[in-house]
Amino acid sequence: MNQLPEKLEEIVEDFSFLEGREKLEYLLEFSESLPPLPHWLEGKQADMDQVHECMTPVFIYPEKQDGRIYFHFDIPAESPTVRGFAFILQQGLGWAAPESVLAIPPDFYRQMGLQEVLSGQRLNGMGAMLAHLKNLAQTKGA
Image (cartoon, rainbow, N blue to C red):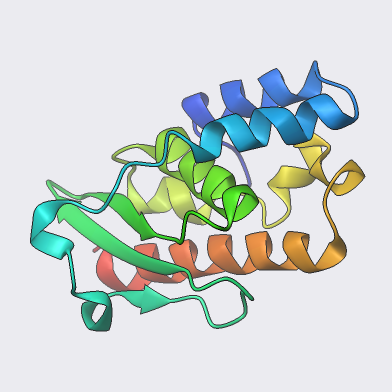
């Protein structure tokens, strides 16, 4: 069954109250909140999963603990929309059970209305990011 974790559902709902350009501005606000990589991951992009389908260099590292998974992102500051979406995923999932990640609909971001303010290419990149999270949850989350 496809469903959103509670925190991610709250973020999606927040976006649903916004119109037009407000959605983009809110997404850009999220980009400023994406934390830097933890010290122990700095300089270790080779150990991270790269989202090759994204025009922006996106690297993801799954951290596992007690049967749950948390995703760290390394995305250049010059890509604020991608960073914003990564932060939404990071905060919306938190330390999630792998099954929760796998249950997210592949195009959940459409519920946020992002297709109104982002190009198809950006939306495809977001879908690719989520697909990578799902793959990591399936292969590394167990």
